Length: 77
Image 1 (tube, rainbow, N blue to C red):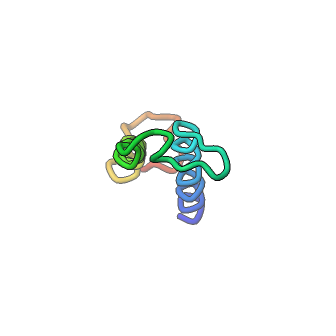
Image 2: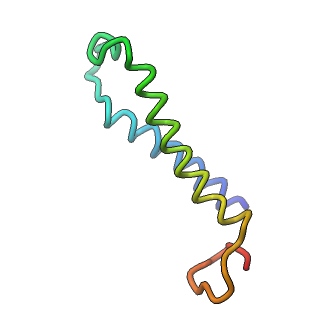
C-alpha cells in the first residue's frame, strides 16, 4: 500500500508537469494573457482527462485480473 501511495504522489507530479508542458509559461507570464480567458477551462480539461485515465488504470486493483495474467504483479486474481 505504501508503494501504491508513493506511485500516486509521483503520478500527481507527472500530471502537473504534463499540464505545464501543454501550456508552458515563461517566468512572469500570465496564463490567461498568453492563452486567453479559456485557459482555466482547458487546464481543468487536461487534468480531468489524465485523472480519468488514472482511475481506469487503478480500477484494476479493485476488480482484479483474470486467472493466468502473469503480469498482474500485486493485482489480485
